[in-house]
Length: 278
Image (cartoon, rainbow, N blue to C red; front, side, top):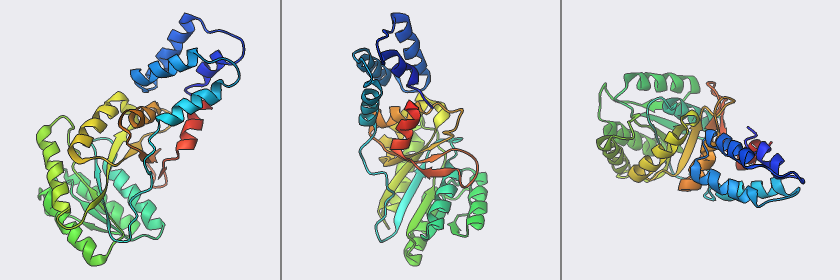
């Protein structure tokens, strides 16, 4: 990514950046989806730096902006219920399948729940993935109540003593308060049988600051515990990851970088920061 290499070059050594240089650097950082508050702070810090410690100083600022909360997925001995939420088009259902693939490949028992009942294609998509992975998926009749599917999946997870139950929820529009209330209802129904260990919000990295807005609203509705950042490839401006963690203190737990089942991995903060600096 290398978002900060030009900034570092300007403050390293004896050269002094002009006001125009700083304006151009600020513009570049804003285009990388870091957000105005974080960009302003970084520029202020950089303008007061001199010499060869520039990279270390910038890195220190960036590291401090990342969340310090645990990034490991809930891993208690009993069933870990994971709700996956997000708006349509972020890659939510695919992320559910990829997470199941990763956990199943690691030897854990996984059960899926197709509670995105408002979109028939989502149920079919998850069922196809489940067959491919070799795991069971719980689904209801067409247009079934999402909370009903979630409840049935909890009962099945208890019966099977599954290590993970991953529940795909509807891709609701984040600006519809009634739909946010429905998400809260699904969570309450789940918790009649088992506690929810994680609520993972899927965000498309290419949506920029809109991703930050989504994270704020979903967090208010269902207390998001972690993020899955999708489409974080060469074309995505990955600064949004830093912006969200800095603003909301919600840790990114997984990233998706492509369409394949293997294009999904745990988020590595050190590698991410090195990528921004390299």
